Amino acid sequence: MPNPPVPPALLLRNDAGGIATLTLNAPASLNALSDAMLAALAAEFAALAADRRVRVVILQGAGRAFCAGHDLREMQAARSAPDKGAAYFAGLFARCSAVMQAIPALPQPVIASVHGIATAAGCQLAASCDLVVAADSARFGVNGVNIGLFCSTPMVALTRKIPPATAFEMLMTGEFLTAARAREVGLVNRTASEATLTEETLALARLIAGKLTAAVQIGKRAFHDQLGLPLTEAYALTGAVMQQNMLWRDTEEGIAAFLEKRPPDWPDCDDPTKT
Image (cartoon, helix red, strand yellow):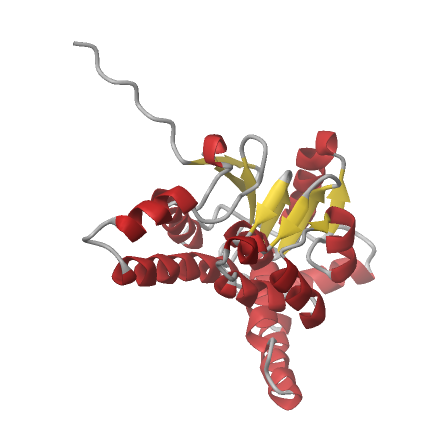
């Protein structure tokens, strides 16, 4: 008998020029965050955290949408299964929360490239990324309230990205933000036509990838660490980071190059403090 066809990978990865592009590859479910998709994302984020060749990560979706959130069919089946119930859902939301927290914890900046819809946990996924580039036809929503399931965990990422009043309105009404409105409130950094979304996202990724990698990574960590700290503590933390950064050999070269009006000579090395 012929072997059964091998199902396509749920998460695709392509590396080029220091940029890793991850593609959610379940277009039939609008790239829903099934148990298998969450496991694939968790594994890939763990691999990226240890990959010094990658400077920037792009996260995108295959098919008609970026991500429609949790897999409701899978959740409904689990709710009816006698061997699952409450423990399953506690684990599901814990696993999803861990994936969302892995994104800001990555050393590399992560750019969400959003087309179609980003809804519920899919909106949470976009909001958890460091930057968002959206097609001008994209829409963002935390619309679980429409089916009686309030988007409590997506609310965490959303309220750390946009004004609370806007987030509260989205959560309570289930209404969507257009890409233009999402950019106005700070959820989206840049917009592009659907035809140019991939190239616009790559352009931003290449711009960041061209900076001193160690400076970008120490800056990302400091950015997230200082959020929510009292003013005095935030300045103490970031002052210590700048002191460390200032003493690097490559920073000395960068300043000298700027003053001498020439490109910096930054060797491709893992340790910017090395002499």
